[in-house]
Image (tube, rainbow, N blue to C red; front, side):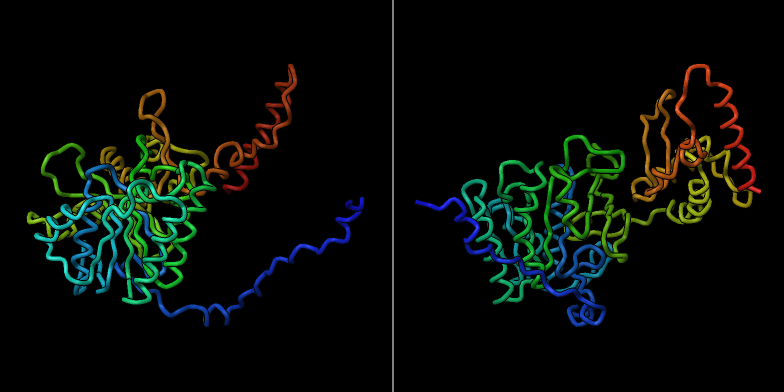
Length: 377
């Protein structure tokens, strides 16, 4: 028979072990050396890259050209490629990859796991796959692991659940801790945002990745247009924010398309940013033109529209609105949401309104205006 206070004499639970902190010298020693770029700006050793695009926009084609180029190294779409071994986990059968091999002449540096499971893997099967890739690195010096597409192999019934997603992604650290670059190919949500395609599922997925790449059509629905926009966001300053690339006619390479509007946009970005930095609220195109700095040539409305679209696509400017007369597009700089609107005018100090309190409201508004005039002087 158990005693009433028996739990008081039970062995205490084991104390969690917290590692020692790392100081600056420890960080230097822990770092394996300079960052190793497999595809400069996009794929780094020990990092995870998430590549998202609409169905049939060319994700796997881009990956296939990348794999072929890794045989000897070189350049792809304007960025350097390092030579290295790669493994691809693919939902496609061997026949599709053999057809690509006829065109791209894959070498012995690439291997494939084609449909390694009968269905969606269990957590144990997923971890066994990651361990197999880690073993390939240990034995053969694997540089890149591609999972195409992620949704076909990620265990768990709900990719919209953050906890489930993080638990499924955690085993990838077994690869990145060895210096392997991991490329996750993914599909977008059915309804994207104005800034481009949005990865499907929980926001934990793009938060987990170190580099986000969006591949999108240059002209959607135009048959035969081989140009694609590559938009990227990254933890690394080397990552190009936006690039227009084109698949060569023979389908074996990508080149960078010279954009005649880029130099013009670069020159116009400085005054555009100045207007948005000085704005007290989210502003329309007409308001931007009205506040354009007099020391800079004012663009035409159509040119300003093109600049704003480019800046939104690159993540340099935020946009909301439907573009209708009753709901025009408005723009602001990322990170400034909390500084705009009532707070910028000092109206957060307004007292709670009482009935017939219009006189006090008027006095408070006059004080706010006088304060702004003093600060501007």
